[in-house]
Image (cartoon, rainbow, N blue to C red):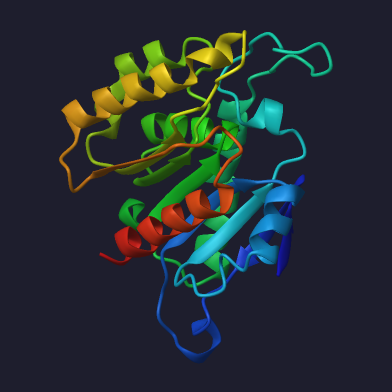
Length: 234
């Protein structure tokens, strides 16, 4: 099922029993694009997922998923324009109210999650520190190497003290890169340490594997969706 709202297309996953019951459901706002959508459909990763999923198909992920401007890492790509605040404000002020009005959601922050992979994982954690309407955050291989992001988290970490957070990453992230991406693992480790000092074991889940950024993608989504399924049901 597709939804068009303003300049964004979204795919909607409704749980199997949505039409046969009158109960309300937790909602996951997933940062995606056509490639992610095709992958989730092909692998049937949402087939039995028990909550609503709103996949936001961003046409400009390099801009929507970045919290502030930064220089491009490669000549063939444009600079990161850092439209993350505008993008998240749109989700908070337009998309979430639309879903809460037109679908049987549970609007409470504890039942409203945000999730994404790579830059989508970056903007998900950034959202948690700025928009308390989303109390559950899943960051898959988050691009925490993004300039100044670690220091930003260190300054704003207290905003996450009431959240449920899932972080996954590969131990080989950034290997072979000569640019800032080579710091991927150390940046994730630093942020994981900050979160470990702030949150209890029941509020923070860390998942590491032996892959690089694009490895074990299916397993990473499966593990995150399993965590979201359980956490949003509690």
